[in-house]
Length: 245
Image (cartoon, one colour):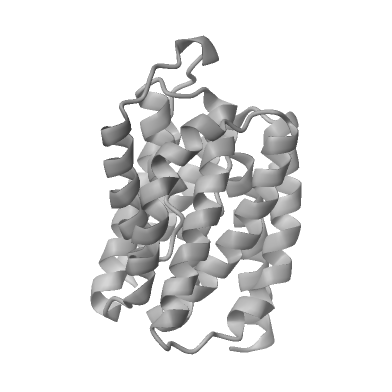
């Protein structure tokens, strides 16, 4: 990787961190898209995306918590089963050809749900059945660990469409959900005796800078729907580029 490629990747990671942290996500699907486009292998992409996810979602979690939007009573119902399942999924590394198409599906799913994401007033929040949330948490945790994402990109639309949380409450819960699942997935990866990639440390500074900016703006300043729709277009283009490159 030459200097121009490295610079491009760092800029992309910083921008992705800004956009994703605005809505309480760590940005793993975006980081994965960038690293895939630049030809990095899944054995490098997965742990690197998880490390960046941990940093950015951690920053976002703090910002949304300080702004008063985090709901523990909602978070634990999903996290209780997602954490051990994310660890199990993180233990395994998918083959390159399979990983590529899974990532494109994740990107396009994320793009669609970000574009059409509704605004749900807080006073419409409904009671959550515990068996359902524990089952959803387990499925999302396993999927998160396999792919190297935190699961917020899947949890957010469920919370909103079901009327379980408002926009910023969803962002806050998603940030914590992404954080714990990414930590569990990374621990699972390390437990599988896989080498820790140096790229993770190289890319971390860009992700942290973007995460600080984005999470502050998302928790206090920006219209979240506008940010989500810009991000959705980026994800569609990234998925197209990956599948046809």
